[in-house]
Picture 1 (cartoon, rainbow, N blue to C red):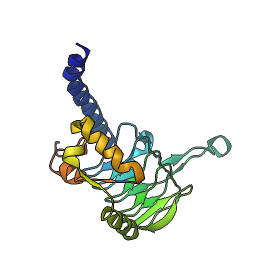
Picture 2: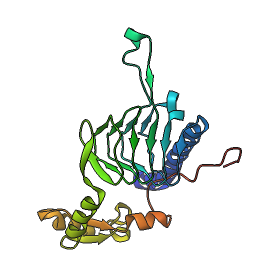
Picture 3: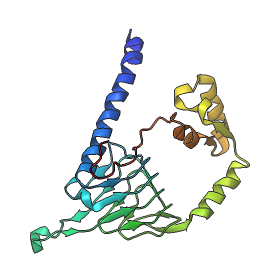
Length: 214
């Protein structure tokens, strides 16, 4: 009985959660925040709502769970009766790791990866991988990708459609665990499936032009 209830209501719960996230995106856009096309912006992302009009996120960006984006700093308010505000510009194809904090007045160049729990207090250049507190360049994006290309040539790879959590059988789970016994493996095809509408995470549609209806 419990299994039937979970099977029946889990899809409904997912649709409700997705609708809430989409309403939040609409609310932020209505207050002046730019959110581009195909952005993964989870409900757990803390947005500086009172100053969200200063925040711009480009197309094809992704955020891990629990990130923070701030566009003002009021820590000196008691002493100066003033708060600093600054624009935050996150360009196209940036990917921000879980728990990262992005502070006011920074720009993250296109195609930049920011490591988990990093603190972005200064602007970061394009085509780089950055991490730390404060976040700084670790390597170029191409160096990072080439390292993983070489690993993918020698490590086990698995098809996303077969080994995604929604289709993962006990036998396949055992196979994955055995493959990971001596190092990492790779799941191939997740982005392709997402672009074809088969991904498991909701992404934003294109932002409506001023005066138009979404």
